[in-house]
Image 1 (tube, each protein chain N blue to C red):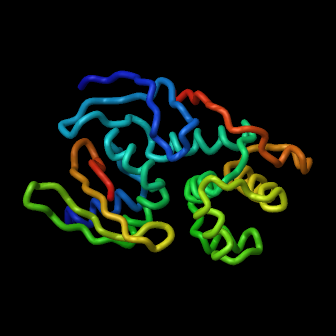
Image 2: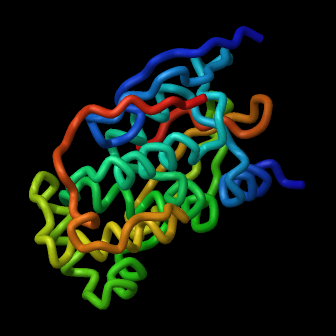
Image 3: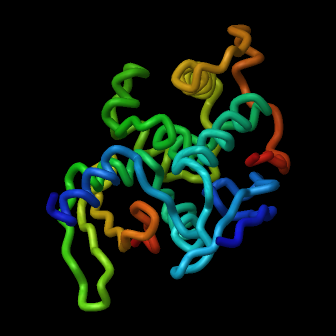
Length: 136
Length: 81
């Protein structure tokens, strides 16, 4: 069976994440991504936290789903209603207020077991930029 | 074991692979691994006339999710909608 590696965009919902060396293999139904199902999502989520990408509605939705929390469970962990989180996510391009961004980043980092500084300013994003993520 | 139940079990347990097409569709629709697992847990599988299995269930937030799968070297998701 033919196997190869490819650089690919559009594999997660965040347009600035570009995957490098994605292992692929042939199948009767077209090319298959030859990785554990959540591996690319986990790499992308880690990049968002480590690179301090500002958290907008689309990042919140992607990160929440990556860590496997429903709207309700995620909101409960933050002491909010699911409606509040729903409204954040609906406003895809709107950045969260610092008072919300800091705990969301801290919560996702904890769920992904990433060590980050607890300094308030370090919990806030800096600037959206393209990120190349090695898939293998 | 019933083939339909086997597919649902594999999806629920995260034992599946995705085609490039399915992964691109998942990104467009913001469908995550957790959504696929939830769909395997909540869904029903049905054999289509083309031999593929259609799984209809819900995602993490209770919204409807449909997966088209085949058994080829394990469970392979061909598309999602």
